[in-house]
Length: 308
Image (cartoon, helix red, strand yellow):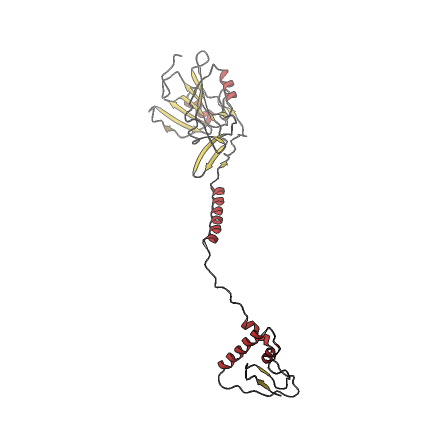
C-alpha cells in the first residue's frame, strides 16, 4: 500500500482506494464542486513546485489505516476572504467626536465658572454686650479707667489730636479730652445704640434723644446679577447717616448712626465679585455698622464748635 499522486491533478491518494483521485472522481460525476477541485489541484501543484528536490513516497505499514487527505483542508486557504484595508476616518466620523469634546468642555466650564454665592462669616454676636459710660469731653484718665491702655496714633488732619484703638471702640482725644467716640464692633452700646442692630431699632434709640435727620447716598444704585441684588463691592455700598443733635440742657454732642445694606454674601461670577444684599425682589435690609459720638463744645475735624 502506497500513496501515489494523480498525473492530471497532482493530488495524492491511496493506490488501493478504488475511487482513485478525488478530483477525477468529481469530474466524472459532474459534481458542482468541479471548480473547487480544480483550485485544489492548482494548490497542490503549487505546493509541489515550491518544495526543494524530489519528493519520495514512503509506503505505510500494512496494519496502519490509509491516510486520505481531506480536500477541505485546502478550503480555508483557497476560499479565505480578503479583508479590506482600513481607511482613514471620514470627516463625518470626526464631527461627532468634536461635538462631544466641545460639550464636555462646556459643561466643565459651566460648573467652574457658574455664579455662586459665598456666605459671609456669621456676624451674630453671642458674647456679653456692655454699655460704654464714656462721655464726650471726658478726661484721658477716665478713658483709660473705662477701656484700659492702648498705644496712641497721630491724626494727620488735626495735629493736637491722638487716636486710641480698643476692642469694638476707637477714641480720638484733643489735648487730652475725648473729642470723638466710634463704636465699630457689637460688644459695646452707647445710649442703646450698637453695631448690628436694624434700622427700625436704631431710629427708636435715636428718637429718645431727639428727632433724627437722615443723609442717605444712593450711588452706586443697586442692580440685578444672577438673581441677586448686588453692589460692586462691600466698600461701595450706599450709606444712610441718621443724626441727632443733642444740645443743653441734655448735653452738647452729635450722635450718628451709620447704616448700610446688610450683605448676605459675596456673589462670584467668573473673575468678578459682587456684594449681594438681597435675593430676587426681596427687600434690602439696612443695619447699623458704625455709631459715632462727637463733642460739639470744641472745634475739630468734623466741624466748628456749636453754641452750647
